[in-house]
Image 1: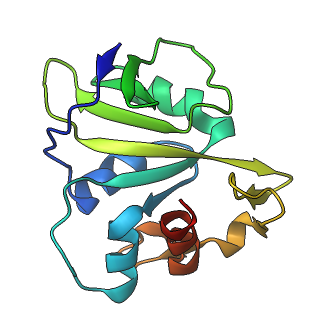
Image 2: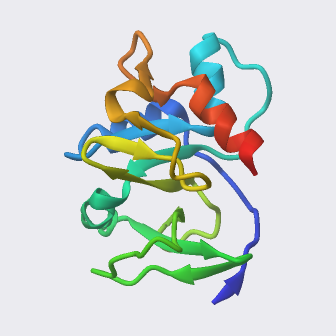
Length: 157
């Protein structure tokens, strides 16, 4: 277990799209990049890039990435190696990835919970939306979460 050190060399949106489009899972760009994709312009420099996936698909993510990438669970200010085939319970919803043998972080993955095709807001389980409601796509086909969902995460903390 190590302290979180924020030395980032984030992938671009296009690089994320290339990697994630090869996987058979639901994914969306999140964070500040989601807002910029919605505005169709870059509003600020981004130190990282966030991707959102469904909890039910996190082991599939690991399977696809395990050849080239090393994942870590971010938890209470620490990074813990994410072991192969390790199913993550609800306390883990934030993963950091870097290329094997590299020291800089490339992207972050947030895990969301859903039930019966409904996204559930972790901080208040009464806030739910159909999965088809929470996302949009750019003209290039990049999926991202709607601004109101992203702002709920940013403002809700």
